[in-house]
Image: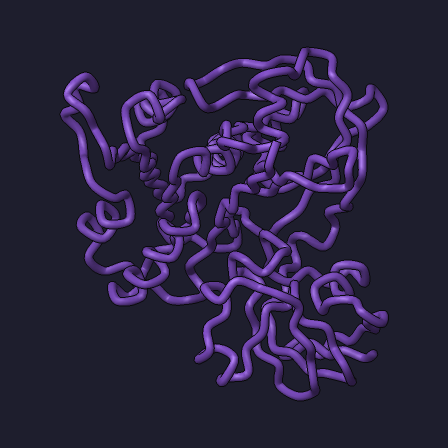
Length: 337
């Protein structure tokens, strides 16, 4: 089935039953995407002409108004006839090769009671080329996948670093916290996703993380520092309690070392034992309070879907352009034991 992308005019063929995103990636055309399961809305675009069939998706990712306007989730849309779609292509990702590789667990380090740092070592003759902010899928033996953002910068790739939150009832995260040992063998596919800093812009950047959404921000910031970027960078990190800011001292050290970088931690459930004198409330509200006019900014957000949805609703009302908002919603998988 022929698919044409506007405004580029690029064309490719989709196989029967293949989604628009799957076909585009297979043919080397990189469209925005993140979760690939119809939950986040990153891949949303317009079907200009032609008939599609939608696989199951979450309504919050594509509203009835979106459907009425001709929009679709390209990760769930299967073309039923030749179609023309309208989408932004991402040229910088075109040379990144998605691989399936083995790796060994080099180190396990508990950063918080429910956050584990995994350092993964690739085979000696392998290297993963990726963009800071992208993620990998851990491939489980039963065929299921678990996606985790890479927390290390590409310039520091001796190990691949993951921040794994312990999800109650989670099959993989439960194994990480309760049974995984160093030198365990894993397989993964990656790098995946289109969440990374657009370096062709000079706009000031707001990075908004919730919980382990700090992981891709760590990679993005360390890569920016390594490249000696002078763009203004402001990290807002939202968490429930002080212990959930699991690398707080690292972010404070960045702020001391880099004059163009600011760090604002925000706690939503600070307790008396935290002895917290900093910002409280929701992290997206802290951003909106500090920057009343977002029209000149780029905003990068990663973390819980609720945080992303709240920002998508609030920030445009403060001038943020749709094309200047990049996000990665963390949809945690839960499995019965």
